[in-house]
Length: 361
Image 1 (cartoon, helix red, strand yellow):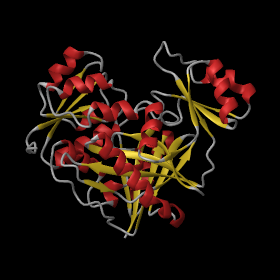
Image 2 (cartoon, one colour):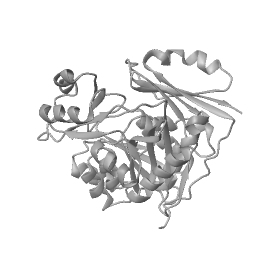
Image 3 (cartoon, helix red, strand yellow):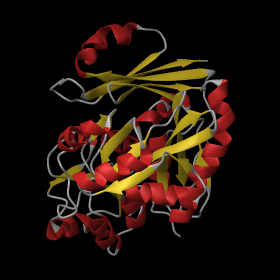
């Protein structure tokens, strides 16, 4: 496969902060970036061009494709059929299969089983009656999730007692098969930590994997990612990384693939995956020789992947959520702190406004 040379234009579906950091990495390598999204966002501030359009508008998408040399996406809220159609016009990576598997929780669980990874017990549920049956089989506590469009703790409801099933069903929006948004019930997993495996696979099938970060969440939103993780997590990292690489190979994935795991007494338990750069990998901008964003760009454009060794002894990434961003002045004054602000004006509660990375050499 011939590499797409510098001076070409990379198209990115999505205008959020992940697109912003991808655009900055692409620019550093000498590429222009063209953003396509329903509305302007942080990525547009650092890109050469922006097309406003819906993700279900074929005419607008095809017109966009004609202006770029390759296409990628920053999040999963794009229909796989659109990715497949774009792929017929321009190199579009990752391809539609990766998106179709990662955006639908039932597919995630089934593919994890194919590579031999352990998951929480689960059942697909389409209505309140099937939820009650699933609770009888799995038991409580359990967590009910929408199968599509869930992130940062959204679209989820915990069930401690079967009597709470109707309330939980209502909390996630009472999804139905007819609407195309069935739900999934997952059994409780006893874990002592959460971590993620971030790998990048090139068009030639080669792969790199960063050190696994230990992730701490607050109110369902990632708060910090720390590398190196604790020894108890590192003891499970090799096996989990092998699962992630196997998943990428099985999918024929190109670009960054992130798999989240629970660390348990019985080994790593697969939770979910994302076919893209990930919040838990933001530390790689300063903390690794090649960031997740640069390697994703390299992979999508058919370039050689860069090395991913640590640049220091340890590194921590802290998300700035809501009004935490107001501490920007003090953070800039901290030795060793690297501040990244996403250019968002409205610091709503729960909204990711930026992050700060602290590197110890």
